[in-house]
Length: 616
Ligand code: F6R
Image 1 (cartoon, rainbow, N blue to C red):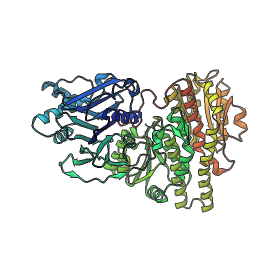
Image 2 (image 1 turned 90 degrees about the horizontal axis):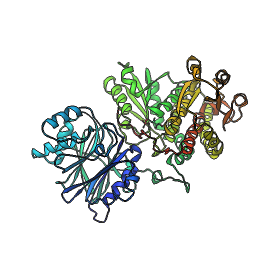
Image 3 (image 1 turned 30 degrees about the horizontal axis):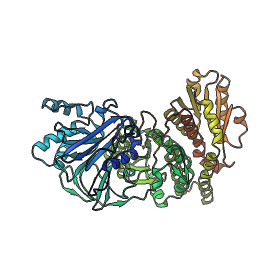
Image 4 (image 1 turned 180 degrees about the vertical axis):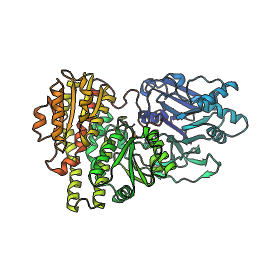
């Protein structure tokens, strides 16, 4: 949430402002209601910030023409104060010498703000962030250097922060600090140092990265950096590692084809990402599955789409011989579990590995109850990986579209692999059977490829529902996870009110709203839920609902009673049916995308949302 990008370089032949603006555009998926840049320019701070998207703000080169030697930019997702220029970052101190950007939330900002105002500081925004530069200003006036002023300031701030500070009186370096909000450093040795919220911020510029830990401060010089612990001011050692992400992630081109939106391109990556996931390193799977089997209690947690993947995983693991797993939304976990029994495992699922609620749940479970953390996470080196005992890295690669879909598909695939590993370790199935399930899981890549080839029928259906005001998504068993995911996608990128229910629940209330033409999407694979869900479909149909069903391509019964059917190309055997969660959900993600595009929305950057929700 909120994107940061800064740089300091020895090179004189670069346009610093333009490079920062380009880096910010790569971070825009983290927040996009306003943006700003501050540069140190011969002893002064040059500052520009405005509400709106970066491309619009910079239409006439407003950012690119800024003079300056080094600096930092920010693209915002508003928390404290509406998205207007005054609340946009960077924020300044009273002297106009210190400029700062922040990602996170300072919980005690009101108290700090009151005290600063009493001491004569003029704060001009409604943000929590603005206390930072003024506190730094005070410590600078006591004679501390910039690094120590930042250290003393962060000691006073409660909450989460990734901050970057430039001081016009310090032409040699800038300072960054982090606690519970991501901040990564990129280095072209002896030349340029970058900082950003995510690795893709500097990926086209360098592949050498350093991840700052919580409660650390770093001094960034051109081409090198020094890291210090906030607690004792001692130097911290950190290795530079090489990032092996593909550069393709930053472009809308796949296999030579240019897509209009990242979301569309990323959907088309799903088949290959599934194959990569099935072929993931076995030793990670082994440890992960063994930890689940060794535990007396197992919980699974996540937020949003990742939670729906978690729910699918929970069903799969139990079905294949694993223990019962309790699913709890990460934002609810602390309240729902005042105590956690000994020898528990918490499985956490996250694309970013930085979602504040997920991290809070994980830390609570680990630090207060000694719970073992097994995480399924997409971003290597993210906070979640560092709090985890066992990690499965999903193979989605960088996901730029704010609404997650390829990461969801790899999360479900990874958790299905865990389920099969559990079946192996518990001898629930024979080796031959496990191989057949594994091969069926691999086949889901081919099924997804076929679905992606036939976009026309989904586009037609998208046009039919595009202007409906409400939709229900209904399913039973493991497919409820698909219902929730389908409903969320349509809601968040096409702005249609949707609700998802376990189909059995529909007659306990939701059915009251059904009238002529009310669309109900049923996800109905030919598994054990099939006979019962026919009844649920008929209950809705007989009250006038428009039935849209997602069925196996050989389906006869449900397609016969549906107004529209989405046919999923899967084989007619128990292996394919059990493994086909992703092929049953992909058409719903595509449907949402086509509705969004048809209505002229930006599916990559839905309003009010941001990728990587680093606030609680
Ligand atoms: C919806 C979506 C969100 C995320 C959620 C968790 O399409 O992307 O619901 O799934 O914010 O994010 P991660 O997976 O980064 O923890």
